[in-house]
Image (cartoon, rainbow, N blue to C red; front, side, top):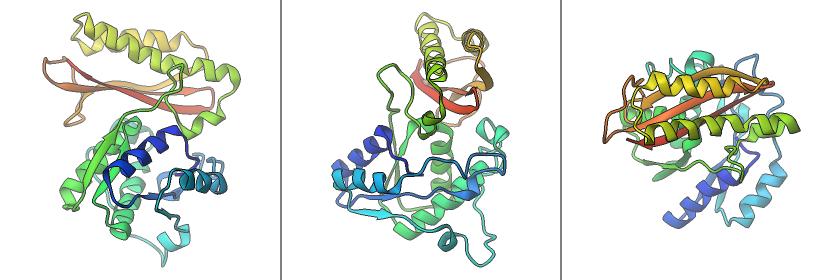
Length: 254
């Protein structure tokens, strides 16, 4: 959705290494924002974004107007029904329908061979992968690692909303993931115990307000009560820091 940062640039560079032509789409999608969310104030700076894309030698910027995308009393949506109901979908009920609809349209407009998505939006990436599989899109999804600040905060366009103190407080998300990784490395396999300790740490920060903490299987995004050897899991966290909602995750193999 623009306001490019190093996380976006890491996706661009993966594409530049692997493909002949790299296309970046920028579209702040009204269909994935609820009326109470931050569509109007979502950070935008097209001039800055264009400068970054030129510097990175991107071939094409696809920057459609909302009126071009949603025209003639638009009423056709793509909905990955079950995966979109939980976790992020529980707190943002119409969000993923807006995501999958716009992504399907972008795929139809651009017809890419490869699509590079960031792991930071792990559920979103899993839902898009499911849509690609179910609807037989002729492309391959490539998930790229989370890019973090030096202190561990996952890069996000919404980080600009944080005050100086909130920016420090936000580190509790990554610190809770590190705590979970340490517990798993030391042999803990019960999700409830891991999540309980994560929650205790996060709630120790006064500005925090948890939406959810979950451990899910990477392949199915179903919740895991017990971690089994040889499988991969996402540890997911969604949390408000002050008035800013942040998400983070860790992919771990047991």
